[in-house]
Image (cartoon, rainbow over all chains, first blue to last red; front, side, top):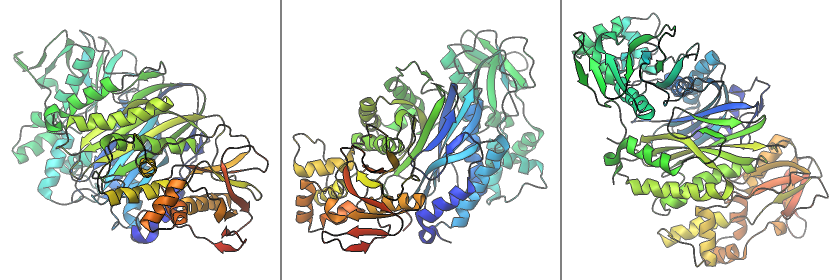
Length: 318
Length: 318
């Protein structure tokens, strides 16, 4: 049924039923002027992300389910990057009138899929008509005992990333080459794994914050986001080219795309992998890619030759 | 300077300086992956509203300052409608690349103007490029001791509104007739007061929640929003035509527009005035416009003749 038939009331009624709250801490969920959450004393995290059709996504390449999944995934990634635990989500949608209620159902199925994985409750938002394509805006709250900012990196800290880099950026190129959506990822192939990491990124938190001095999630590329840590912590960094974790799938895909896999890993963006610094000697499963130094930003090759790097990667308004 | 020159970093740096946090409860403000707020145990309210160019506003008729003011005002209105006290605001912007940094400065000056009035801190958000006009999305948190929902109205309760109705809707018509922006409202005229109530609505909270049984803010028109209270509380309502507060300015403007002032007051929308129900005998400065009954929804004229009303007013997707 088209949104123009179901109407705003019908839509909100549907969403309400879909997002019926189960936690006793949700005093009021969707359907009133604001959501009401029972909070305990502590630190509340809050983050917002907006996704605009034609800028952040192309409906020729993503399903509504994948889009909903990604909207919440990128917000979760921000909460994880602060050392937090995600809790409550609000989603605001600007919807073209021609959309069908099934489209919105699919969008919500994606949001709920990842919400379920992390025990997140959808408590509110806004729905309105858009004359300019689909617009998504999400706000996610979280809680944290120890908050990790971008400001604490110190000379001598190790630099780590929690997963392989560049998969998402290469996945986007594969998707563009393919020229159409992927409806399912099972059975998976190496190429599909890259495409999936672009369409449905899987944020994953650190298990322990002990010894962690700074953290950020890589959304605009390693060089760009590491530069942010350097800026905020007023330090420099050296990363080793050979230590950047690159998946076998990325290696093959880069070959077929006739591109350098390292370029994807350094500047690709949308990895939604955690980049953190830690005091020497911490135990971690993450990949150590370099060290914090007092000043300057360099990439070292296998011979130890250092080349300065700039904050290159994805930037809006350019 | 154009956004394409100042870039995303420059913009965020500006916003950060503008929104430097003063409250000791803001542990982290703009500039990290998420904002961090020190919370005490209690009830946290959270609401989101989206405004899209061409749907919610026309830049031919509003300045950026007025738009920023309104974005936060409509979120504040939602918090007040729950009986809450607004606290922290996140603003996400989808910005055309051709915008100048001065435009964003003006937008923020409007947000900060009303934020200052209510002691609200701007703690975060997202900025991204838009190819489809200006998009604003705001999320506001608040706290409350006693939360007032839409569900508590009971037979015999009085129905009240906190201010005159229809001013905003008539103001929009006057603005369209005028055909251009209003840059200042001082010295004010009756017409300008109506236009101002459209462009820069002034939400105002109830002083006491004692005896209040349900509440909503009027955003889609009295009939529509009263119907929401009736739906949620499973009751009916009768309102008296003669008791609907209509300003002298609206009376004159409606005449000049050749329209019925009551139509503006009943269905105009965007009033951002509180509509509430209360037990008999409460003291209030608000206008009593009718009573909650067991079922049915009626408007009574001066002779006492009752006519059923429907949930008419602004609805998206129609």
